[in-house]
Amino acid sequence: MGMAIGAVLGLIGAGGAVVAVPAFIYLFGFAPLEATTASLAVVAVSAATGAIPRIRLNQVRMRQALLFWGLGIVGTFAGSRLATVIPEVVVIAGFAVVMLGAAFAMWRKSSAVEPTEAAHTARWLLPVVAVAIGLLTGIFGVGGGFLIVPALVLVFGFPFAIATGTSLVVVALNSVTALAFKYDTWGQIPWHIPLLVILGGLIGSVVASTLNHGISQRLLERAFAVLLVVLAAWMAVSTFVLSA
Image (tube, rainbow, N blue to C red):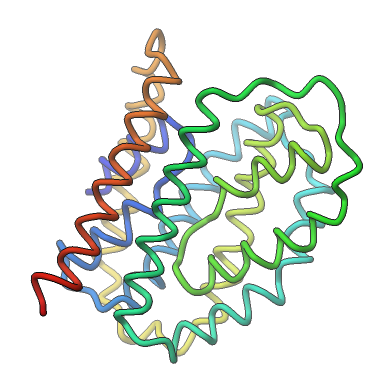
């Protein structure tokens, strides 16, 4: 499972958490709260690993990444606390909706055009999206790169490569912060499973990154968007139909 998640990250550069959470729930028997907490560890390591080469290529704007993270801490804390009281069925239903949103964003990104100039008129979006991403990270254990990237493009006019690299730093910081806020859940998690997933993810990411040359990025992103819709439908059916 870790290698599959790593392959997704290596080929597309995003989407690891939206695969990790269903895997923890349906393959390894985690409760939703445990799955979303364990996912934060996977996302933090995956995003940090992906950010390192981007930093070397000067594709990360650290000041803007720290600003985005700082503005979203309130949302991250609120989401982490809400996750402990929200009913499990609501978490699963909400996660399915998040997956559909990620699928829509991925499909749109596959057809998007590089910005030609900075769009500084959308400054108000920054705190709004930062807090929203913090909530998503705290509640659902997702990185939220599918929202961070377009926000950075709109607010700062970043090219997609810069926005993606900066997003990875934000995702890593948000995930570590949310994981710290969920300290009271740590003892419920069999950590050897997330650690093995992380190890497999690192291997899968490296292998996929060396094999993705010549593969259409647009095709990969659209195929992954379809996969997310299928997974979201499965989560809804298994929760509201099969378990009824």
